[in-house]
Length: 115
Image (tube, rainbow, N blue to C red):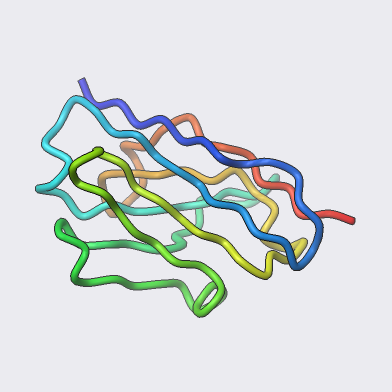
């Protein structure tokens, strides 16, 4: 059974940083591209970033480029998202997913950026 558990969210001031983690189980993590999505209240699911199975190919949505860094540790079955220079508009529930549509995702971790 696929299980994805996100952690690391919280309340941070504008300009601050957070590091999200996603622990995967129930599938061969190192064989899959992995994705980060987010969803703000009243809005749809928004793709944030993706990383190839071995981490050699990485892509970001334009709105997070240069501020966020996706990475993975296949030995630990863990996906990461380092978020720097956070803005209030980054506030959302952040999910990791193992499919490009975000249908197979975890329960999410809340990120709130506010002064």
